[in-house]
Amino acid sequence: MVGSLNEEEIKWPAWLQPLLQTRFFVQCKVHANSNKSECNMYCLDCMNGAICSTCLASHKEHKVIQIRRSSYHDVIRVSEIQKIVDITGVQTYVINSAKIVFLNERPQPRHGKGVTNTCQVCERTLLDSFTFCSLGCKIIGTSKKVQKQKKLSEEDGSYDEESNSDRNKNKIQSFTPSTPPPYRIAKRRKGIPRRAPLGGSLIEYLY
Ligand SMILES: [Zn+2]
Ligand SMILES: [Zn+2]
Ligand SMILES: [Zn+2]
Image 1 (cartoon, rainbow, N blue to C red):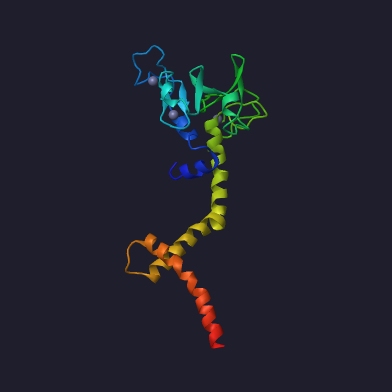
Image 2 (cartoon, protein in one colour):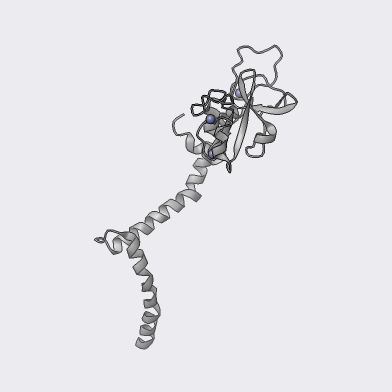
């Protein structure tokens, strides 16, 4: 998975990948003595791993989401996640009368007979209308398309911007090659355009 981080950042929020890699429902290291120290929350602003309900006090103004558990797998309520991530195509389940999605794939050793629809990534059996079994599989399954899009945008838009700023740097350097701080030079050169009307009048005078 080398070099795939950038592509994911384009399509997915920065906190999503760290969230999927976080282990939840472990004892909080900071509040080990508290009886409510099971870490079942994640701060989207800090992205610093699973936090417990006591930790929450130091994330008051932050966006925090709650992770739940279903048969030893981490799940999140659709009502929480769909506001911040596009979960289209990810199979939803109803657990304790709440709609949820799974964070990561769950290995399924054997398929039942007559299976018609499976997860595009891990091949878990799905209902017909879904493409992925979990958020994690959707990230993997959509990343190839994102890679293609990235190559295209490098050829026109974003790549041009970079080379432009390079050209500007070169300009400044070629005008004053021996002076080290380019920022001060750029400021001083602001006065130069006044020369233009002066030069104009000079030409008028000549003609
Ligand atoms: Zn804690
Ligand atoms: Zn926070
Ligand atoms: Zn899957």
